Structures are given as C-alpha cells and as structure tokens.
Image (cartoon, rainbow, N blue to C red; front, side, top):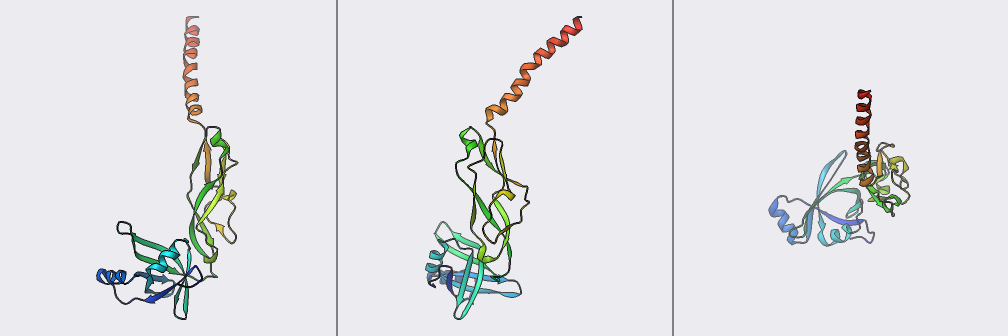
Amino acid sequence: MSKDNNEIAVQPRSEFGNNAARRARNAGLIPAIVYGKDQEPRAIYLNAGDWTSLAQHHHHLIYLVDGDRKQAALVKEVQINHLKNYYVHVDFQAVDVHAKVHSTVSLHAVGDCIGATHGGTLEQSIHELAVECTPADLVDEIKVNVADLDIGDHLLVKDIVMPSGMTALTEADAIVFHVARPMQEEEAAPAAAEMTEPEAIKEKKKEDAE
C-alpha cells in the first residue's frame, strides 16, 4: 500500500466464480471491480491486509494504483462475510476528481439539547442528506449542533453548516431535527377538554328547563 492513506495497490483479475474467489482469498486477495462512465468495468484484486487497514479510515475517495496507472474511485459497496470475518467483494466507481458528483452523507446530532433537559424528546426526521461536491470534498458524515434546540424548536436543512465545497440538494425547508413536547403535556389537552364537557351538558339542561 502507498504511504498515502487513501491509495492502495491493485492488480488485474482474470478469474471469476466461487472457486477463483476462494483461491484469491487463500492467497490474501479480495476480488473487486471498478466501473464508471464511458469505460468498461475493470476486474481487480486488492491485498486483503492493505484493504483492511485502509477501510478503518472510512475514506470515500480511493486511489487505485496499478503500476504507473492511478485511478480515482469512490467506494460504492463493500460485501463482508460477518460470520467468517472476511471481505467478499468491493465495488468502486471511477470518478474525475475535478467533476462534481451526487452522493448522500449521514447526519448526526451533537451537543446536549436544551429541550431534552426540559422533558422534550429530540427527534430526527432526515438521517441522510443528498449533496453535490467533488469527490475530494466528500465527507463521511456531517455533525449538526442541536444544543440550542428547545421544546417546539426545529432545525431545517438550510440551517446546517455545510462542509467546504459541498452543496445540499435536499429541500432547504425540510425539517431535520425537532424537539417534541413531553407526553404529559400532549395528554393533558384532551383531558382538559373532557373535563369541560359535563359543564356544557349542565348548561344545556339548564336552558331546556327554562
């Protein structure tokens, strides 16, 4: 693997099928494929040890190095055999590092919500944000500060501070987080209405008697 932590050496793959995959796995290799616009899919092998180390950093953009050829690619799918703890296959999408791409980014709340301390519940309506950016600007997640949200408050997509070079494509006025009122308050309103109903009945009976 290259000294750069988002580069990995690859080698061409010409064998396919379960038997070939088993032989590759025994040799410490992981089958993978690279596909992209205006190019034929390219079957490759990754070194299992190098990929395991690289995967720990959760890079979106990877540089696949085959001799003098270096190709930028996004990690699109990783298949893992969790029972036996090994990588089965990796899919890459070749990209132009200078061209913008559409992708999704996870949203995670950070900070102690004021509304939660007052008995409210922080609820998240959108967990992934559709974005546009160059592959180099793509991040794994966006952390959203919800500390100032009180009961009844909400935070919209347009309120999120976006990372440099990234634009949100999700509707700007869509609610991402909101703080729901305590259940006791919601239940109290119907109860209050029920308490006033007998009074209304008494008034009606009084009018009838007159």
